[in-house]
Image 1 (cartoon, rainbow, N blue to C red):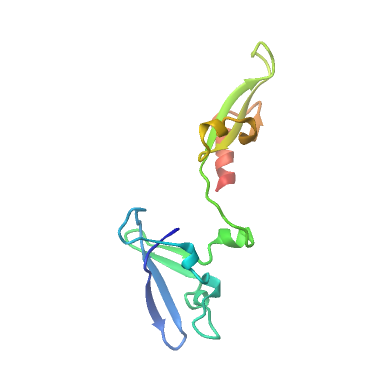
Image 2: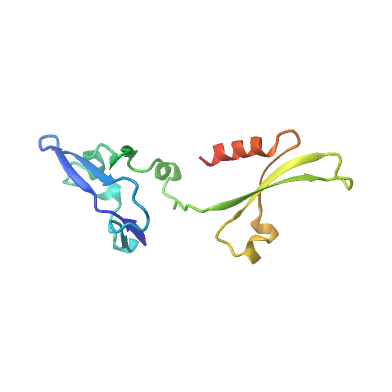
Length: 157
């Protein structure tokens, strides 16, 4: 299922066949403007939609989607993550990050280091606590938890 909103389409120029596609800004997931649509009902994606033999919908809107409202934004089309994924399916998965200051010594006095690992948030606790569902991210014997977290966040962006 996909949550969809009806876009406003404005013809900028009949001669050049340029259009502006805009959607309302800051729509809540529970907004009545959004409709649930089965993704199997979509027969084409953005790059496959053509206005005529010469121009695609993406080219007609200059590869931009406008968001109207108090905080107007312009989004590139297609999403840059789609280009980066090179046709692979993109999944947004929430994760739980864990930091631990561990030591390999019995006394816990020497060889301290910070370790970060993560588990998938959607897993039931019985599965998320299993060793093979805990994934190592990084470790350091000099950097603190916040310094490591800053680097992890930069990589996730």
